[in-house]
Image 1 (tube, one colour):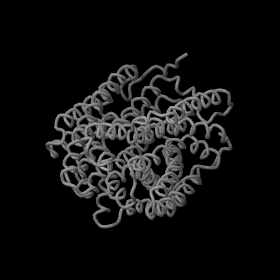
Image 2: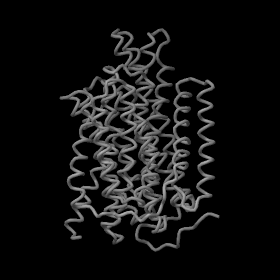
Image 3: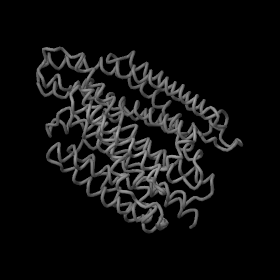
Image 4: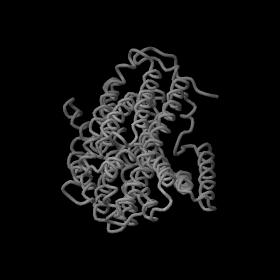
Length: 493
């Protein structure tokens, strides 16, 4: 394959990377409008936003194995068809329940795209330096998609109905289906990595009940069902680990986690995604429902942060050539923590200052996140690069989705604690409900409560990122500067 054709193929592979993450964040600005038009309550709003990301994360490793078996290009194109159909279903969903179902289908289809795309990148660019640059390009597309989602959503909502935010998925998948067969290598299946249905089921049973239990407990429902769900999820997780240890060809090779650099990088990526995914949700809702910006204006307000994040992604690798990656990652996390601490201090009093502080936070997260995938792939043996890629993608999607659920649930709990007890039930349920009540006094009280919520959530997030910075130093301090010679990766006993 010529260099020009390989670059064109790489450009094609960035499309699903961009779209999978964009589809996770694009609803952030559309959520208030669709909630009003569909009548979605607070719990349904959380499911609409987070079911997609959790199912993407839950199926990534499974789809990576399936791609090894039937061929990566074949799985990529099949996933593109499914993603386009599910996008149409979401765009025209008439009820919250059907929208949640369409988002779930989108998650499963989205999980077919990323493992195949990264595996095909390694085929297109076998030379290590070119391969590293190509993987960084795909990772930049992932981050750009997540950051650009609110701006794209706001632009569409300025001219069309809320379902239009799903239509870019249809257009991108059509382009992928036209160009993919002509430019991408076949990536034929090896016949190895047979799918184990029980492992797939156990992985989902370990994830989804825990998500449900955490959300319900955060909403104040300390009942039997949430506690049973948490217990069931933990037991399924234990069963999953036991089964992987017994299988000759496991769905997930647990030996990868014995490598400290890989384990540390994954944990830092997960926790960073949890924090920023949830804060992004709170900030974009604040800009619309408290400041009063239109969806387009709210999306455009996040563009400086988008540019700052991409600048951080590009600056991370050169910095890691001069100082150890642990220092770059920890420094990025501390810079992000300082930005969020400033958000907490500003609160709801100065929207411009809040956006500026949030931009600083995103710059820091770009510095840290830009090195994560490279560290994960570098820590894994070459023959397990595909599994490591799936793990890194799983952690990124799970982190942002967990942030939308966990930090979103924290925001709901804080809001309900701060809003006056004598407001109508709809206003106590959510700020969108307070808008629907139509009473200026109720709305003012609810907006004040949500402004306080932004400060509390940002403050908690800042403290968490300080802890993540310390974790990065502790777990990655032995990783040398980029390009420096190093002893082989230690493996825990």
